[in-house]
Image 1 (cartoon, rainbow, N blue to C red):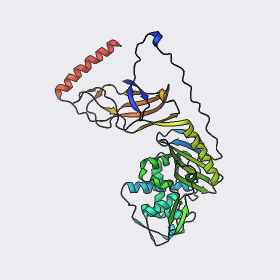
Image 2: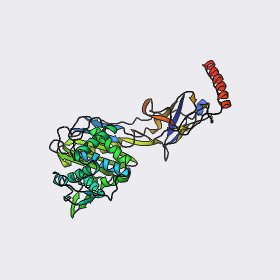
Image 3: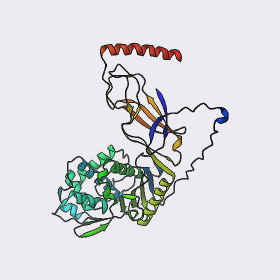
Image 4: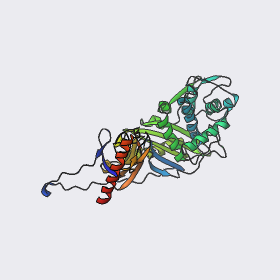
Length: 401
């Protein structure tokens, strides 16, 4: 069962049935004027080894180069370390005020530091800030020991969650990003991880935009220069080692559209900031992201056979966003492909078809349609009546075909 719909823009995007034009005399009908096509230039080429630009809501990739090349991620690794801390906070297995014992191993870890002292107890909240804002290797190891008993088992957790999130070309050996023979990731995987950080645990995301962090009387700046230059940028993480070069994962939001940029392998702090700015400017200039449907919005009410109700409310179980070239929203339309002969019983969340979104003739998105309510099996008389009605409706359909 196919149902076509038009999608029109307003304060929010709502679903309308396709409207049939009124029959007017030929002389009174307006001749449609061709609409100018939006011209999208090629994405900028960057002085970097690998990069990608992703919309945080729709997941659409707007630009990429060598985005699946396995590279040393340096301190971008700490995005996964922070993500796992945030996950445990969300699950209430740890609290921000919990105290973490600082081991000699954590204290001795080289590289960038939060400057925690061996034998002290430090709050989870402070350590999370130290990981994200000042890239503290000591803080990362301390949290790895607190959550998993050691950095090696914590790295195993990191890899399990990388697989769960679809990070197909990532393998972690530690919680810090210090060089390891089998420690690698990609621009695409870092963008996927960043999208989950933003969308899964938004209550902690404000930390990524903080410009300074002070601990033990030592004030350190966030190394993401764009936090000072572009008010729309509010995260995420820098990285550097000799092997990785200068890397930066950034996110910015303008007019409700959020982009994630990953740039890996530039030759300086300034270069990673400038190259990132090129990507973000390109995305915001030439694309826009629209929320088409809310989670739980009723998109159709198809017939159900043999149930205690004759109709089923059908919709999507997630918000539906689409990223498309600017000024082409009037070309959007949707098609519902509903399973034929829906039969009770049906439970909330059952698959009942697909939603296809088209931009002109191109399909630009597809989502699962689900039942938004339970339809229980009807009584014996109702089921028999529906069987007869279904039989004759099938005959009529075959005859009209």
